[in-house]
Length: 417
Image (cartoon, rainbow, N blue to C red; front, side):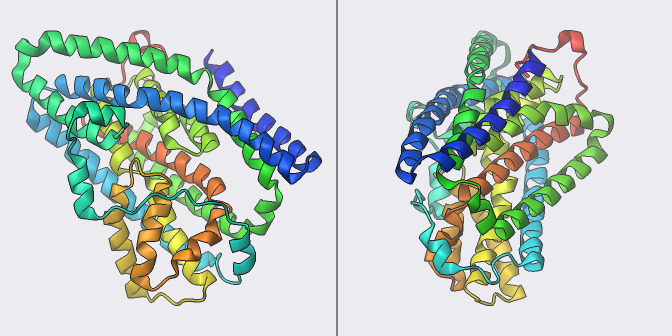
């Protein structure tokens, strides 16, 4: 079953590319666009299925995970270790993006008029200030947060609920058992939903290439190639640092996050991989209490691929418009993005929101976003997969720091992959 699922995912990616290119080459632009809408419907249905289970999954697994932890001090210790990794990874990702865009200079000589003409509708949500972000952290109602899929608010409520259950002790044992049963049911629903993943992956790839074709890669080859090279360097750094801590367990972690990363890459959203990533890490034998605590926090504060993209995109726009950004200004940009990138969870086209909010501070034209929108989907695939890899490694590293050992294979739960 596990091997078959991986083969289905890979076959769906290849099949989507072949079908998409065939449609692009044989149909009129109008016909290709119409076909893409049908493919997009399949992808949208899958993403709606994912969104259907994410909030209940975070609520039940995070609350149960914290509820089993002996004391609030232990919760604080695990949370501190997680934030140390998150902040370090964010800083490294921003530095790598800044260095890569300065060395490779993908924006130098870019055809602005041609790029702007090829841009699609942005779909960018409004930028959110830091004061608004902190106020938004606290849910006015947990039911409202669940209904609107406000994951960050669900995380905050789950933290309070889990700590309270842990503090009450035996009196809340029955409630904790019910929440655990709910988590088990939601994880089983996750298994069913993930069976549709290969179809969504096929549709997502086919829809993208049926309208854009492979020519978009040639037009933006330097930008896309430079970005993926930076992504590869970032992933290598994260895996290397994690390997120093995980040692012989590194291979098992990479196997656990392989399929979720492919799903995130194909669908261009790290949310789609969250349920499977949680299930896969637990099935590999990592402590479920720690994984179900760290992973939701990571999805709120540790989007490494998206964070790196922010500096990369802002500097690319500066290069394309031949606007010089001094080293002190670039350092200021890095520090600014260290803060603003932490408020992007749950915002539509989140990385673009942060970039759009950053450009005016450095005298860069806001319409420079048009330069990257034509290939934003292609780059979103890479940054989404990187987000998943970063959070998977973070969960395993924190579990290792806590001295948690892998469960014996005979005791591990079943997983789809």
